[in-house]
Image 1: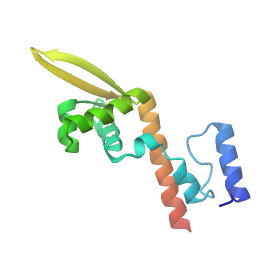
Image 2: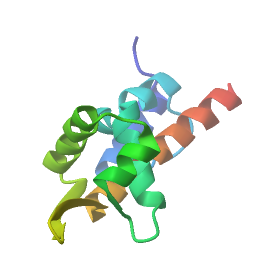
Image 3: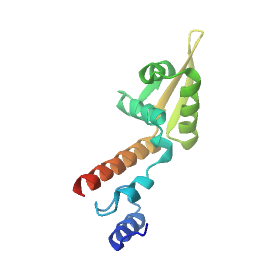
Image 4: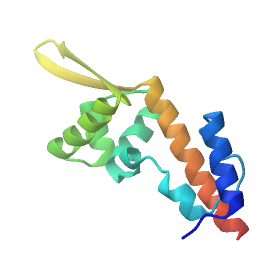
Length: 131
């Protein structure tokens, strides 16, 4: 599908400006949808980042995340590792007495990635409603 000239202009302006938001809602929803962060688009990873963003100090323990997301140890561990590798989440391992405790914190790049993702979803919603 060929891009309209308006869509190309919006895309080019946004790229030149280095903007994380679309310059206007004239870009087709399909174009906006393809630019979603694939790492965050996964349900579990979006849940992890959202839970961390909503936490008081943007930090939760492994047990708290596991409970909030109804995840298994292996599933949660794998998804958190991908977010760590991308720099979206940091991990702090400590001991409380003899019990290990793993805390995860949303990093500044993770917060920006979540905001960009939410802005893109908002742009898709606006484009869909206006058509």
